[in-house]
Amino acid sequence: MSFPPALLDRAASLLDACRARALRIATAESCTGGLVAALLTEIAGSSSAFERGFVTYSNEAKAALLGVDPDLIGRDGAVSGAVARAMAEGALSRSRADLAVAVTGVAGPGGGTEAKPVGLVHFALARRGADTRHAERRFGDVGRSAVREAAVEQALALLEEAARA
Image (cartoon, rainbow, N blue to C red; front, side, top):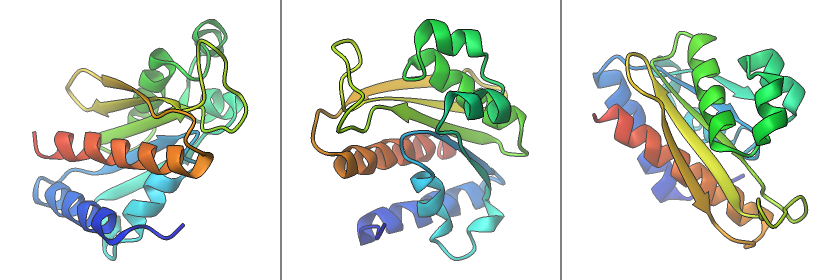
């Protein structure tokens, strides 16, 4: 994916803010398939603030790599606020990062239901020593690429807010 210049500028600014505060970032991604990590690592020198990324597309990967309870996934579904929080907290506990963002959703074109339509994406931001934050966005059935791009922008916004807090 080729990232728009404005998004690259935001990523560079985020990494500068993290470096200034000695913060490291981890990502836990499902529907974005590693695009948040790809955006951050597109910036030269990102290794000084980006610690690691987890691409946990399957439920099994969420459990094995991030420690998400399979019963939680079974009860709430992979696309839920509870699972997004567990993903972010798992990424934080399984890394040396200070901030972790998680993304899980339905990018489409299939896979949506009435309760969880295409375009529904849950985000979570975990920070050491702070409560985990959750955000839900309904981007609509605007196409897979558009949902994923909007999700990357939202994840970046959560990281920007946390890095400047």
